[in-house]
Amino acid sequence: MAQTPVPAPIDPLSAASAGRPRAWLPALLALAVLAACGQAPEGGGAGAFGGPAPVTAVAVQPEDLPVSFEYTAQTLGLREIEIRARVTGILEKRNYAEGGRVRAGQSLFTIDPAPFQAALARAEADLAAAEARHAQAARDAARLQPLIEGKAISQKQYDDAVSAEAIGHADVLAARARLREAQLNLAWTRVESPIAGVVGRALKSEGSLVSGPDVLLTTVTQTHPMQVIFGIPDNERLKLRQEADAGRLRLPADGRFEVRLKLADGSVYAQTGRTDFADVRVSRDTGTSEGRAEVPNPTGLLQPGQFVRAQLVGAVRAGVFRVPQRAVLEGPQGKFVYVVGKESKAEVRPVSTDEWQGGDVVVTGGLAAGEQVIVDGVLKLGPGAPVQAGAPAEKPAAAEAKAGS
Image 1 (tube, rainbow, N blue to C red):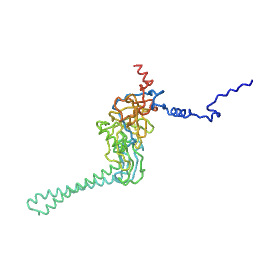
Image 2: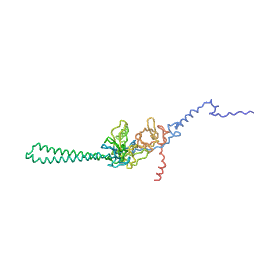
Image 3: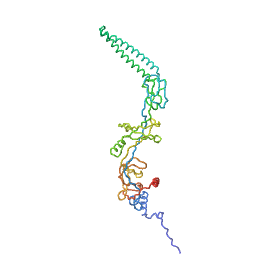
Image 4: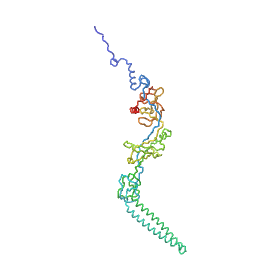
């Protein structure tokens, strides 16, 4: 007796079922898309099975935070002096080591003094002759004094004698002035440094003709303390002024910031300084206003012309919030955070931010005291999504410190 064949089960994905209607396929695709987007089929950001999404949140409170401003800067010697000869002559000798330190009053160059020594001797002789002529004229006037009283000589003779004495006195004064000039010229053959500092290379060698102050011989730079010059962009200067006027930013009481320097290798310079000048003019070329600070340099580590980063410390931002960086999101309208709103639903808060402090972002506007900012779980949220907020887990180091206390 022949057996009736049993039909094989139909595989919905096999070619044999190609002609059958697949009503289940659109629903399956919709579920796959929602799962890939991290959203539930219903609830706009609810957790599994439509429940509240578990998130962690922190309550924020306003606080006063120190703020610093950093600018590219360049070092400059406190004083940079040009060394020039005051007399014309042949450069006889260089009296210093190039690049070394010199004292105030130390001789740097010697100009051939022989012509000036001869001029000094001539001036001394001229003074002696003038004094002798003046003495003779004075004696003549004195002898004629009793004669004019007895009318033994004419008035003109007496007046000529008195005038000769006055002219002799004037000649003495002129001779003394020429002597002083000759003494100065001789002294100026010794070209000295007016300040203590680091001297540059010699720009003229021995045997060169030096034509007075027109010729630059070298420079001396005072390197302790040093000046630091930096430029403040005009838009930033205006912003800081507006925030200070509004009370959101407190500047140092005396207007002088503490200045810390970062060197080219990233290290922090050990000495700190103070700002001592802020220019009221804005450069037409750079759009910045110049600021200046004075920084000690006892070891000479800083060199003139060195590029550094100047960090201005001493200002305080009032009533700002610190929010973990991962809680701040970026949208088409700017930055925003999610907060736990009424009925435990997520609400969007547009915020304005400033610089970072560690792992936190400083929020200057958009939040209120006591609001709970959602920190973890923000990527699966939408506006109005129900949430279940919990406190963030403590970091291991913080937990150990707390347990130890």
